[in-house]
Length: 42
Image (cartoon, rainbow, N blue to C red; front, side, top):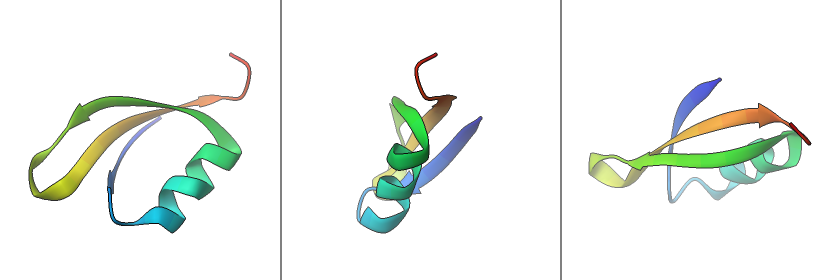
């Protein structure tokens, strides 16, 4: 799954990291990052 999260939204980033392995795909304009969420251990 892919999603965009603002770098300043620490709560959303931590929630994604807790549930999934998070890979930063690209930094977007406005302080957002495009991330790929993969199942833990995949």
